[in-house]
Image (cartoon, rainbow, N blue to C red; front, top):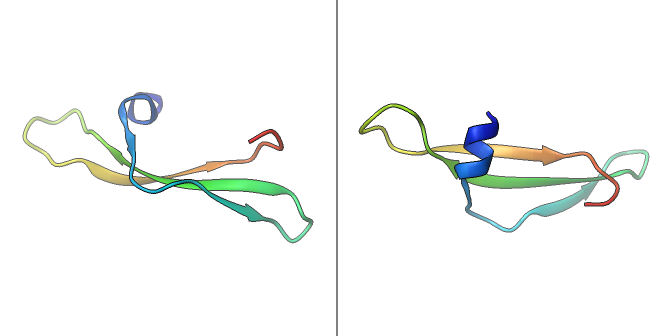
Length: 53
């Protein structure tokens, strides 16, 4: 998972959202390369729960 995040590429800008309590979180979509040869990249959603994002 960490390798995918490091080697991945964002496909859209991160989107800032709020929970019901008002806490901030961010969702980003990215292409992640797999370890298999000849397989296409897959899409992944990254969610960050950090007030400093």
